[in-house]
Amino acid sequence: MIKKLLLISIFSTAAQTYAQVGIGTTAPTEKLEIVGSTSIGTSVTIDPTNYVNNPSGFTIVGTDPQSATVNGQVVALETLYTPVTIQPYNITNVYRDDLNDLNLNIPTDKYFITIANFEAIPSLGNKGIYTSNDNKGHFIFDAFQSGTTWHVKIGYPTLNTENTTDKYTYKFDVILYSKRFFKNLGEVTYNLNGSNTGSAGTAPIGI
Image 1 (cartoon, rainbow, N blue to C red):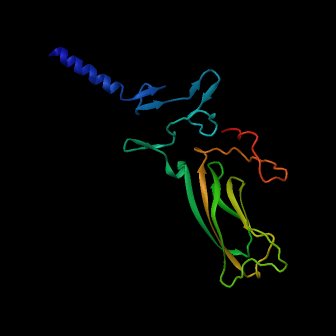
Image 2: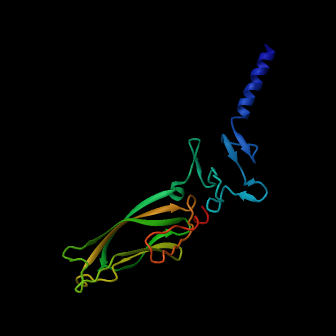
Image 3: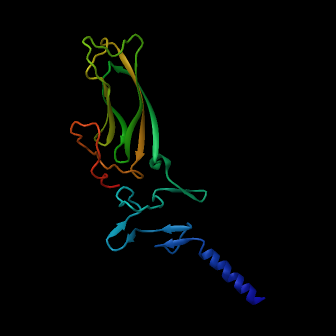
């Protein structure tokens, strides 16, 4: 009977010991917990806390150091670490068609942004964009960084509104990508030399 109790105790202890596996820690609290950086070979070091500069070819699954534990589950702080956020905007009473600079107060160090679902709505009685000499143009929508925040500029520079009392409403969605989950590779330029077809010489650097 003593031997049976001893074996049960050993198996129970082993089950508890291997319920959590730790690398770089002797007291893991998760099924798999890695503390510190992970070295591959002798020349490549991957830092799990640096999501932007990890080399391509490796996938790191880890816990953000600023995340929280809720009901025993590790979750990211949503206001900072949601991978994609969509924020609709409704900008009213814009003077004529010129929105020269709208500060969105979205921090550039935390997010990249893109614009979608743009709509220009003339005010009541406004005849909208017009021309007397058949000039053609198009709306320009520019999202740019100024200081530490994202800004937008909207307008129709080649044409005019009916008069100076006309107003516009601009509607658009700003799509925010957290820099903890996405990286910006920068602009890629290809010269087609007057052709309407082409092929990139190489894939973008960094993918």
